[in-house]
Image (cartoon, rainbow, N blue to C red; front, side, top):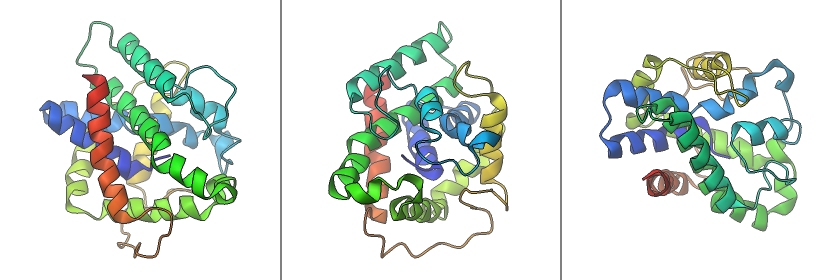
Length: 230
């Protein structure tokens, strides 16, 4: 699904559209990293897509069903479950912007499932079957790094440290959310993309998704999220 900078750019666009202040925007940004915090559980170090799939389905608020992670087809049910849990988490506190960021991440991945991921799986089924070992995921990492080197991301990275993580019971912990945030500012990020002190990559030869398509996806995903949360 989408990589960190894509999620942060979508979340930032949502926060801007809602006119949020810096503190609330920071919470939305941190929440937009939260569902992928499961990657930082020790037992998932170097995990395959199938190996981490059950945990990802939980953290990404997927509806009940037997379809494995990466093959969910009930997108309407997925949207409904994400919005249901957002309502539960917020209760009467509509200023829970960490929860808003969390659901923004999930809705972004649903939109990715409907568009980029669906098109890729349909056109390149054998490559898609390789999961995280595919050239597709290596290319997405490079595209995400290219996004990081755009000026707008500097503002996002400035705001991101301001928020405080918390547990989302049964989904992801505050420790895991902090771990994924810390990884973005680390010069040694384990198996994940290292952004700090990096150079902008040449992504012109990536065959599955272009940089222009990723940037358009950010805009379209932001609109998709806003259409659902409003």
